Image (cartoon, rainbow, N blue to C red):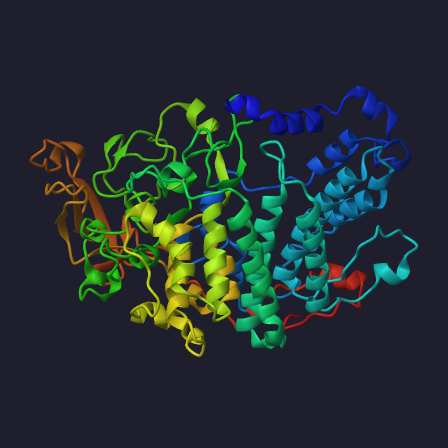
Length: 604
């Protein structure tokens, strides 16, 4: 069934890789000859295939590579480098100012009407192009804020346009939402699997509107607070249209311990009712490119801060327990929201795929390494030995869960949220995992309140705090977190170095949950015994030894205190300068070419 439904994706691959000889023979090698193209629906499809850029398996490490409090990263990331730099500037931050995609989209929009197709189809393809243009511009606005708006192809003689200044963010955002409005009204709902349809457009429209509305609300440096509700209303209405007419619902078979995880290791998401858009992969046809990097032994590893955000199974806050910060690894997983055990490798997890795990397969023993938190990720991890399975995993790019949480958050930010709204959004997600419902006027978690102090002046602030928790948990390690922190004006949270497992001192520890000790922590001055000298536990297994010490020592792993404390991953995350680091400078090389591009918001 999946292969039949792959027709759209396969045609994309074939057309873009083969590009039949007759086509190549009749078009210039360096540019599209518009006089010979844009004549048929196939031409329109083929041109727009170039803009199908959606996340694949890298989705599951993006919380680390975009920098967030959900994960540590031993590698280099742009924001981490900025925060650690003594003087980041437009000379050292050089990415993001590329406009070739926009030129090609505007080329399409200037020529698509030449195709011999019905007006209805022309409107559909115009809508697709304008959707992709809106995506392009939203990425630019998120990065630079004010950017030049272009809705035509610029020639070398168009000096005024080539050297124009930045347009105000408000104007650019209005224009891109005009594109989204048109696309939402004209892109067809019924499209082949793998193709952008009306519901994909509306999901992105709701996402972008929620981002822009909350960004304006919580970022006074823009002086756009007065228009924040305009975009929150757009987010609310776009989400509601999907809820009322899209025909989607949250996937649940009633198994609270596996339904959630099955969304992220599925061989076939084409019939899943929660999936609005998926990156469809098929072994030996369109391989996913999957490998074990998300498991936690490459560069990215999950944080204790994220783990501590998960509720208890009775709906209470984990962080209100007196000893929550010093619980053992095994204790941390007792009576928790079932999504935790479907996101983190838990005590007793049985590992089959051992590519980046030196201890081998079987009951998982936490592999501890310096600069890693010690937590491992199973969300997006394909725990199967066969390459054919990992090659064919489908990736859920857009889930109906996002629509529900967008609607709930928009309603809360607008001060309109009701218990009925919570019951058709947040509480449907909680039902999937058997967690008690969120009620209006909920109790306040002091830690969550401290994270987001700027919400307390709003009428639904208590509900906003818990909707933000729900969003963090539901989308954990799917790449949403950095955008969320940026739009909520919560960049300062990124200064805290991600913590790992807690150990109260040296000695032996059970980390599989069976009551039998598995590892030994030694003082830095001690040596790890040779293999034949290692102690054997009651199961007949040799204990695993680690020498502990401070950062920059030759220890096996770093602890925060003197032979006790939290595993440390990143030594220093630097300083987040507010509001400057919510934006990026235009690269100096481009300013040199066009001096009318003036840096803003403290950048030079």
